[in-house]
Length: 239
Image (cartoon, rainbow, N blue to C red; front, side, top):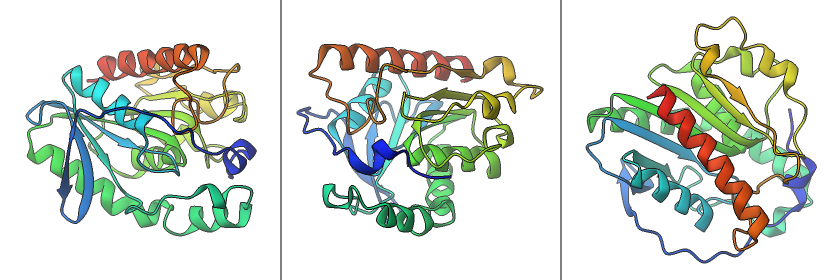
């Protein structure tokens, strides 16, 4: 279980986007909110290792405009990885085993879930990018109360992890991720398998939907929009 090489070496893209949501808190956790706060359908998004970025804010706003109550928690507490950390596998491994670990973030997941429930959400979906995919898979394995999750250019997914989840899963790997065919096959036989789906973006790189995606590039924007459409359709199917 490790980060793809592209994750270790590729910096985030500078992007311009004027966000439409609002900032607030869940306890001591800073969050970005989008969409109607009284919606019965909610989504929690786990950004990638670079934290808040224009692309993930834009995705939050898109989903909010579709009627979801979207929460993007700042679970790295304003201390994302920096460009200077790239090319340093030891730094990434330490991150994965400490503040980026499931054990360190499980409390934020339960707090966010409970907050959304308190606001009236009856169905909650999860979206995770890069390392955030590992946390989403862990949440769907260990915690109750989620309708399903989407993982995009995943990282830190071990063999057999996908078959452990207890809710529908959408898997969107890029060319830089492993072949998840056997891992995904572990979902067969689950009562919700008909809602699960995997679509590879073998012409795209790790991070094209997150902080590394240059959405001013026509090809990257087209493929990112296709990935977002898959996420939207998946969320609609489970909630």
